[in-house]
Image (cartoon, rainbow, N blue to C red; front, side, top):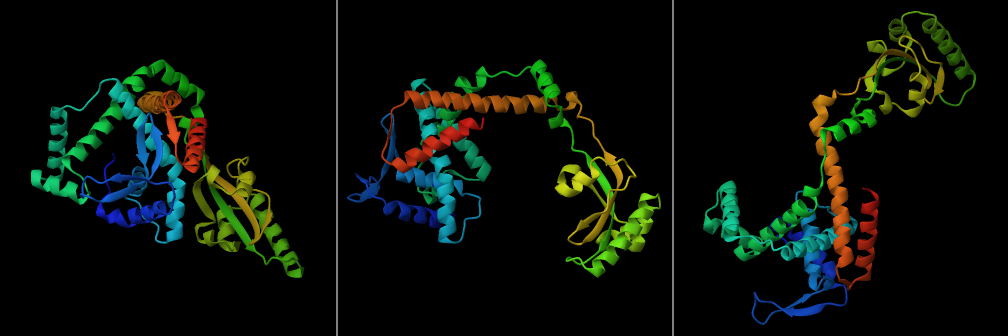
Length: 353
């Protein structure tokens, strides 16, 4: 069981529930909350005999939107839910496998541990026992429900810690090796400061364009010949930058439009580019300055490298571990579409690690 959603999300819950009600193949069970009531709960998949129901998926879908802006139109909401569903059904199956593994390993939540967690919740929120119970009730939960949620999260964390995290190491030597093999990752991008002159010209050519081109060529000859670029820009340019002598930047070289970058990346400081015809007119650039930063000092970023590489290894190891749990599990799907989404998502995620 996962934590139920706050009342602010009931609109989304109702929508997802309405979508589910339109699907065939529901199983029937009796509600323990309302005597005599009948609740229709569609079974999506059984994992080692334990059921993941439509309600479980709905709760995961609603929880995924907690803190996000919920799409206002039904079509946009439907699309958003569909896009999240492969990730959420996979997460739900994987979490159940981890919980099952934790139980196999003999982990459980003691009364002392649960009481400590409850006390922390009360302190953090300024609740007494009655206020906590009332808050849980708003989300349709009891203390027993809360304990189950906490215990499942604890099992997931303990299994990951014992079976995955403790088997991963990252030494200082490995960090240095990674640093030296990936220097570009730790080197700030080069930046350039440019000056520009634009001689505006209408598109389409003709006599007027020829006259403008002659003017632009004359201006280009002046700056290429060594005349002060900023002064000529202030005098002749039609660009918005003319009041600052055509100054543009500093700007990361990689953020320049491809055509502009090609014109300036090989220039020496002070050198003027070729004259280019653009949709706005005739354009010329000067490289005013350029920075080519050095890589960050290893000792200053060593800890961040260790953390980053460790996390990358952890995610890869966790994916391998989950794959082994899936392979050993008996997973019985009652929804072929969800099964396909699950299998494709697992394959795509593994390929990306």
